[in-house]
Amino acid sequence: MRGIGRRSPSPHLSRGEGRGEGRRHTPTSAQAAAPHPNPLPTEEWGEGTRWRQPAGVFAMAAAAGFAAIATLALWPITDGARAQQSADPLATLKAKFARPGFVPSPPGNPPTPTKIALGKRIFEDKELSSTGTISCTSCHDPKLAFTDGESLGKGVTGRPLARHTPTLWNVAWSPLLFWDGRASSLEEQIRFPVEHPDEMGSSLENAVDRFSRHDSYVRAFAEAFPQDPRITPANIAKAVAAYERTLVSPPTRFDTWVAGDTAALSASEVNGFRLFAGKGQCINCHSGFAFTDHNFYDIGLPNEDKGRGAEINLRAADYSFKVPTLRELAWTAPYMHDGSVGTLDDVVRIYEMGGIDRPTRAKDLPPVIRLTDDERSDLIAFLMTLSSETPPQPSREAWVHAAEPTTRPPPADTTIVSQANKLFQPHYVRLKSGQALTVLNDDTRTHNVRIYDPRFDYNSGAQEPHDTVTIRFPARGTFEAFCGIHPSMRLTVVVE
Ligand code: HEC
Ligand code: HEC
Image (cartoon, rainbow, N blue to C red; front, side, top):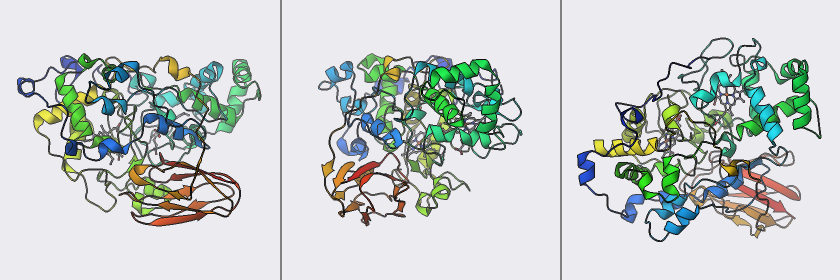
């Protein structure tokens, strides 16, 4: 489809950076001459180093959309990384980016090989569109790292879409989908592109009609859904979602390094990682194995689009967009929600300039970042270590298909929850019926406590630092709360 064949194998690298010129980024003589002291002084790391909990905690939170029940604090550290822990001063930091041990999926849609295979077939099927010409792969092309290579993609009408097509790498971990988070699960997400008049201009009901004409589909649905062997909109959505959860970005040189092979990265790339975690404070938002915390921030791009703010009708979230994964960046340009930035060099320069200073500008961004030319190229060299050397294919690691652990520590008996460092603490609490829950904003950021529940629709509005909200639950039972701006923050409340 569009875009295929127009890309060189080394796309979108700026100004001579990258694999075209030898993948290893041989450090310049200046860089080679200047050793990078190890470890850095602590103040240079900023708060970033203590902000995030292990990736496993987030994976847990994302496990089942808003009905998450899974394991707490699973934090697989590879044996290599563990062995290094004492010797390697970067070990703690590296461990924050260790690959996870399972792919989260909701209780109602466990993955099976037949379901995943069916989902892949539907994902590639043009019958999903009104014209029979557009499939999901037209815009999320597996040969182009599940992007379309365009600033703004086009569907059945040929009109450019309002926002840039994001890659689908690692969407399994994203609690909310789309740049503005308007879909709350992959199962819910699929109807948006299918029904969008400019994307596929059809409906899942039409797809049911079309698929029902093919015996092979009738059989495939029966095998994938033995309990409910029908072609239905819900089963189409489940199959495609199960397939999308297998789109885990493959291990790269960075992962080899994290796993303990210190020779896997060059000095320049390691310095780039230090800048990423330290001076650049990129880690404040691009954290975890997928290099995103899946929250929404305004990074100061010039824009009319209010993003998350328009979606949840909250000014504090205006101009905020979901943090994209930084995996496979070499293959996913152009960048940003509007596809306006063509190269990583330009991305880094935008962060250096600091973007538009407006009230919504993320507090997680430093005001300006002063980088030397060598530092900028080190930072970009590091980012490139998150990309495959050849066009990436979904990971084949065993854990991608491993079963998800189901045990979970018991809830805490408390009526007070903290939000410091973008985490509900504790995040699993038990109240007695009639007790109110106090949620402190002891963080530096604005939060927005929400509960979407047929029994209880709760929205704190913009909860500024130092504001406290008190929540009185209307009934016994389990309630899931989250932050509308930082949806990786999840809180489960059991009212007994
Ligand atoms: C015509 C191009 C086009 C087609 C066809 C298309 N998409 Fe997309 N997709 C987009 C764009 C553009 C966005 C971002 C829209 C936004 O955020 O407002 C997107 C976003 C997504 C996301 C959210 C990713 C994230 O990180 O939040 C998922 C998942 C997705 N699409 C899956 C699909 C599936 C499944 C299909 C087929 C049923 C499909 N898309 C068809 C263009 C397309
Ligand atoms: C405050 C949170 C935050 C910080 C800090 C941050 N980013 Fe981002 N980053 C984002 C968000 C949000 C986007 C998407 C913005 C948009 O599309 O409007 C983004 C987009 C990107 C992209 C484009 C990816 C794509 O696929 O479109 C790159 C590359 C990137 N950031 C790298 C960095 C680097 C390097 C740093 C440190 C210098 C950094 N970021 C610091 C939140 C952050």
